[in-house]
Image (tube, rainbow, N blue to C red; front, side):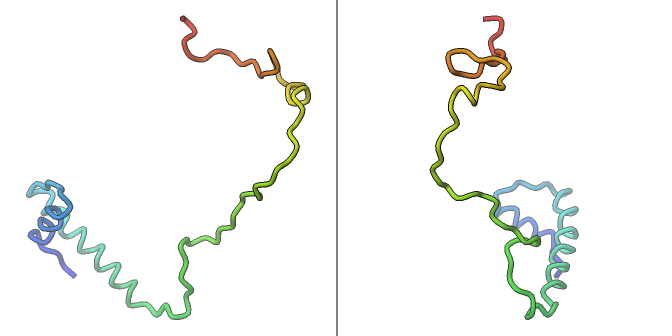
Length: 98
C-alpha cells in the first residue's frame, strides 16, 4: 500500500504533528514500506501459531508475599561497615558542604 504525501499530511494532522514538506516527502515512502511489510506478515498462515504477548516465554519470578520473621537488628548490622543507633551509617552524599 503506497502512501501519498497528502495521506501522510492527513495522518500528521490527526496526530497533531506539524510536518514540513521535506518530512512529508521523506516519510511517505518509509511508511509505505512499513505498511507493505505488515501486509506481507498478514499473508502468512498463522493458524497453528498460538497467540502470545511476548516472543520469549516468560515466567513470574516473584516469590509469594508471605510473612516471615525479621532478621534481628544486631545480625543485620553485624557485617555493616558502620552502624549507629541500630541503623546503618552511610557516608553523606548530598549537602556535604552544608
